[in-house]
Length: 287
Figure 1 (cartoon, rainbow, N blue to C red):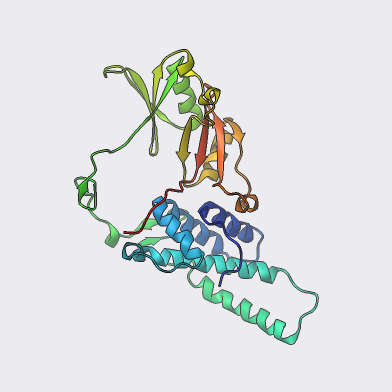
Figure 2: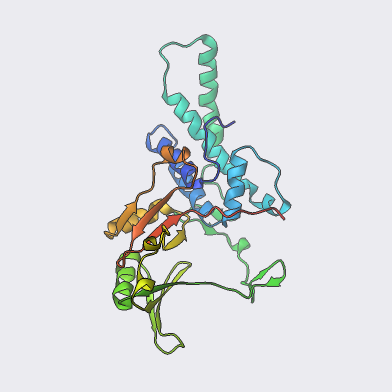
């Protein structure tokens, strides 16, 4: 049974809290790898599934049928969370104990073995391999010819933000060298532009001057773009290593638990735009 207070929506904070316990020592040598394994699997889930995982962590057990196939992942998450809570309790050695308290403490120590049995066992067709889980052959499936949603063909495949820049080439170089984007210069289309791509993000750079090229905060809008990220902490560290200007840093895990909004950080690009990076909190309903 879980006793610690966890955030309602921020899975990153949950992993940070467990990571702090593991970093403090006293855990099984496989605990860190188990944390990485579960983190990778949750990072691959759509936001709706992650939200169901948060609900499971808070005691909800009534889920739609289409969620039940990933319940083993939620169970493993709770197993690790309970394990870390017990380690935190056992780390504090009281000056005096009654006979019953000593027996309870021993029972808690013995129960750690049951939690540790699950560490790094294959899960949902994945198994731990270094820090990257691999799908087993029996889970491999041919890619469908067309992407569908409940039998409906998805006609809208992707979208791109449009940034108006005084010097698109300068902006492109910044995004390539500092942010890890790849650039394609497309002068043979109806609107000549530079297309930047990284992961699932696409940005279109076009040339322009005047107010249209100014950051949106000049017009009372706080951010020029939101990027939803499964691991904002890792991305913030990457950008800091590239000397990108961080306007607002991620709060630490304990501070984030008191916040009413999701953890996020904000960076500034070479044209002064402020871009917010946050984990997605899309609303959903069960089918």
